[in-house]
Length: 200
Image 1 (cartoon, rainbow, N blue to C red):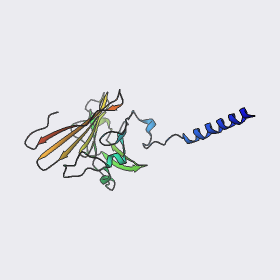
Image 2: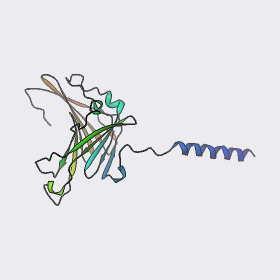
Image 3: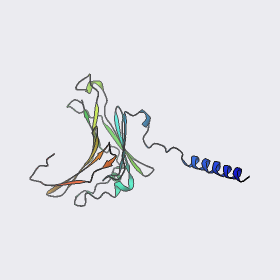
Image 4: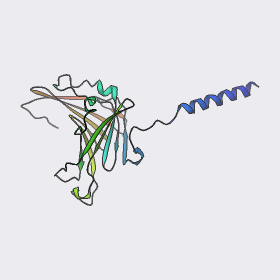
């Protein structure tokens, strides 16, 4: 009898556990159709959690709280905040795309949404054969340009880059995610006066 009761309790506990493990709904529409999904821990300077790359667009997902606690522009005249873009019809975010002709067509679109405590930034570019530099090669999305903040996508890493502007000085912040180890490096800071140029 005791064994039956224990078996029943274990079965009930398993059902409760499975019910609580419902698959979390993706914040990115049609993510299963993406060319690439890059996930990373959100413990970086912008709270970036994911970049999803499609044929004609890229989507970046940020943790709202970490993003709004951004601490790297305390000397900046302009306080950076993704929240400030929420009421803007066309935020003006852009993609850096390889194999695109030099004349950039004015057809790209961008938007930002707040979903379940996350900022979801979508940037679309005109994926047209006539805009290809080399018709035999595909377009390759290299980076997302979100105001003064950039996300560079590389084979082995993701690089976050931010520029804070003072009256006579600029601060460059970089942080690199190693896709093999799954870890972020510390934030590098470079201070540059207006009369000098930043070195890469």
